[in-house]
Image (cartoon, rainbow, N blue to C red; front, top):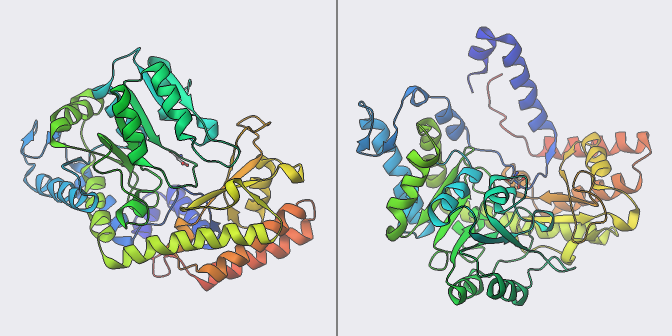
Amino acid sequence: MELDIIKREDPQVGELIEKELERQQNTIELIASENFTSEAIMAACGTVLTNKYAEGKPHKRFYNGCENVDKIEELAQERCKKLFNVGHANVQPHSGAQANMAVFLYAVKPGDTVMGMDLSNGGHLSHGSPVNFSGMYYNIISYGVDENGCIDYDEVEKLAEEHKPKLIIAGASNYSKIIDFKRFREIADKVGAYLMADIAHIAALVAAGVHPSPAGYAHFITTTTHKTLRGPRGGIIMCDEEHAAGIDKAVFPGLQGGPLEHIIAAKAIALKEASEPAFKEYAKQVVKNAKALAQGLMDEGMDIVGGGTENHLMTLDLRKFNKTGKDIANVLEKVGITANKNTVPNDPQSPFVTSGVRLGAAAVTTRGFKEEDMVEVAKIIASAVTASDNEQALKNLRERSLKLCQKHPLYKDMRH
Ligand code: DSN
């Protein structure tokens, strides 16, 4: 990272970026949607590609001078198709939410019925929340999870038969079980709906074969590239050739202007990294680490929604301690652990307060944490929950979390 160049040009911004680097180095990142990209990916984001306009798609642009970005975008597309075993990939969406929006634009009309997981049960804003475009312009029927945090597929089927949606969304922001894409497709077929799989969270697990793939089941697969997949911030849409032209048109000119070719180059690098054997090991370790964290927390007397995890994340249920997610997320920050408050199924608290904290293993696995480290993280979290009012105890826990960070340095060769 060319921090010294930034600091010379703009010391205020440069110093804040430096502080953020130090924060990332010295805290335990458990936000389930975050990760640490490789330095090559970060470098690609800061290249001359940011200067280029390339509206359109490779070889069909509205601007000249696209011969290099055409090749870069094609590389990203081909790598994505190969990695996820799909017929077509649009790598231009600026984010996962915009990828989802493009599928809506192509597959349904305003007023049509769409089914998605309820936000407070683990769904995503763009799956039909009333405060999002998806909930404002479409007739949303939400499904939830049971007390164990599992999707009740029979209930999904019943709702689908009753409401006849045109689009069903399978995917979540906070769901710790394996998603049965085959069953979702059977339900979609029964009512003549399209199926969209939003794999933003589990993309790396799918790519590595650690979670079943929606390829072959979902008509559309959307993802972010920066969560478990460990690329730059951005989105991708995958589909069969049959829907390729329509999806491409929905992204541009439907929703977006010029694609971010510097980010697309970084996506290409991320997709190359994700196809390497080391990445498969990484994805496996993410799941092992998540399981170790869940077990460690339960061994310390903590409750985990659903009694464990089958992927990279889990929700710590604080109800029996009479503590809120909001308070404990702030306490964890004091001890050097970053996480976010999250609702638990049937949460008595509002989404701004919540009774849970979502915890994920993707980022710490990147910096080298193994199962024994996750057990120590679990002990720190459990002690922070029970001693949340004891400032000295929290200080001691901060020392322990710093030790773990020092044991697994992050970006240690990055220039300051
Ligand atoms: N904000 C993301 C997450 O944390 O899961 C979803 O977009």
